[in-house]
Image 1: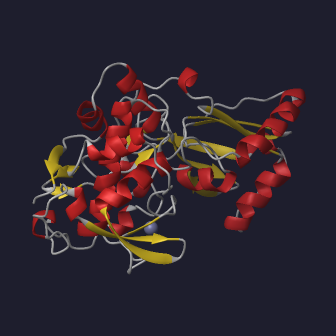
Image 2: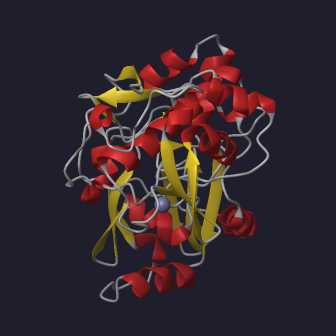
Length: 334
Ligand SMILES: [Zn+2]
């Protein structure tokens, strides 16, 4: 493991930055619909075929989204809506309207797909009376007042979703990646064939929150670790506390050992509010500094990457195929 010893002056400066960085939610959203809740442990329930789902009466005028009922948990109550009514709010909640049109269309298809996955493949046991909720840490964010540009992204992709093996995929996404996306298996244990690491083209210049710094004192680090892992022994020279850093295939932190206990990268990210697990760690007597690249868990579509692809001329289908390996773009059956 590489260890760097920092000057105390630098650490002091970074500590100020860290307070800010730790409190800032990432743009365009914290986790991009990617949901720690969308974990492999939820992958065991039986699947239904979207085309035979009883929730899909179909046939009426107004498009396939308009024929797709969805129950949405909003402000504590379940609202019966259609996909046509719901989708612009989900896109609005998850991606800035300033993004490129094709990125917004890719987001609309990803959001529709995520909702169909909840409807037809894997209902969320946290809210059995609703198909989706508006908690971005559970399902997808939702915001009213979507402008025409976002409504058009939903309307112009009416009924289109990403499928694998004939079913809607778990279309997770995140704010930005660090050069490449993450394997689902590295984060959630269960590898999904369409959620594997691929190159992602966003650059730091396109996203002011691409790089983030979190610095903690030795005491803060010890308190955070021992509150979760009481057996951790963190005494003496803090520069020696972190050992055995392992990395995932995409270069993110898979795990490390601190005070004799193994901590996964995902857990570390949650404990210290890191932007991502694509982190460089420096440990010294003054404390521990994490410098991260990208924001979110890194699995599935990168929103800033999608925007970069769109700016380079890619359409929404090309964007989706780039981030979700081996998918078929499918139409909700009428
Ligand atoms: Zn939910």
